[in-house]
Image 1 (tube, rainbow, N blue to C red):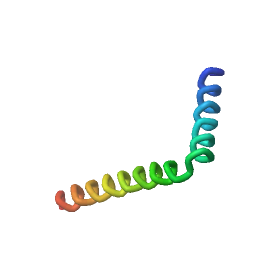
Image 2 (cartoon, rainbow, N blue to C red):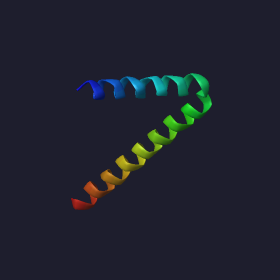
Image 3 (cartoon, helix red, strand yellow):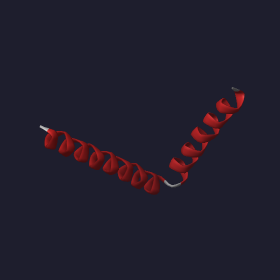
Length: 52
């Protein structure tokens, strides 16, 4: 279990460093992820609507 804990802390430290050192790029990454989730949700809604 300690390895999982260390990997979690390392990932959190990397994200914090990325956000602090490149805030514009980090914001773009979050926006891309949000757009991807919105697209997936729209596709799922279209599928469910097509079933009924």
